[in-house]
Length: 336
Image 1: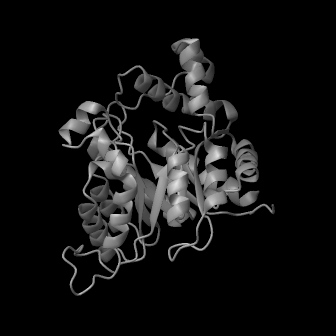
Image 2 (image 1 turned 30 degrees about the horizontal axis):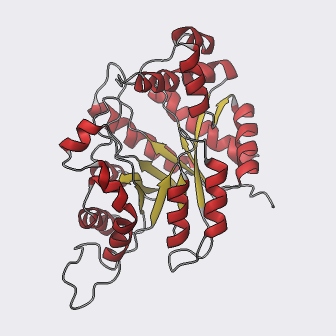
Image 3 (image 1 turned 45 degrees about the vertical axis):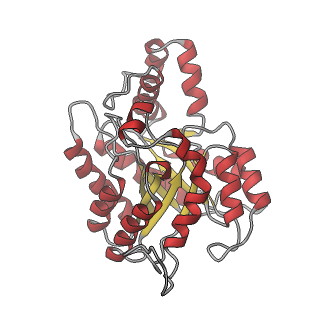
């Protein structure tokens, strides 16, 4: 298969709340990064719904999308994603219909079936884990609300009906791949933290895709951890923030986003060998290093999986270093 030399890059912003900071500063940083991403040439800027996570401030995802869309001009802004089991499809259609009316041609809606939180928060949201079983029918219902409303329609999304809001199916398993293929929708795979089934999911999606009015051929976006810095050692040091955060989550004590350790080698001493192995597996889809290393890593990843788009994420403690990392990643991508 012919390699696509310059595929679009996008950003997944987990709205990190760092130690010593707060949500207000996080939202200011997100807007600053989104404006920089627009200048750098990124296509999309997405937020992900999480609840009860002190280090992630994107719980009210649609509100945050509006904040960033209102402060930028051309970059697409969206959800990667809305966890549909937490919501009534009509409410999601109304929220994103409102966003699409305010910022026409710039709003994306990615949908996931995980709750994005723990069981206690699911109960607090007045939902149940059983709602995930209704995900396929909820997606179809939501798609229907964006269709032009018939004159005798009993329930319509206002605003929402008749608006163009591209919907993506998100996933980290074969379930989402199969659903996206069946409905003829674009598919985004969470390879940045759950890469185990990546190749099989791509085969399922591409092999079973049915053209639809939404999409004529398969469209895959893959998420990738990318940390770029002046040297390989400095990038690896910055990446220890994400590694620590992942271990803390696995330990059952998610907190604010921590500063990096003194060096990459310090991470092995900070956690157990089993924890390090778990992090290495979960974060296996990562390109960490200098400009040259990132250029080679992006090329290798694209050559291997042939995505239509890449969505980069970087949980870097220092905001200026985070902005610089995304700038270097785009420069490296264009050079290959």
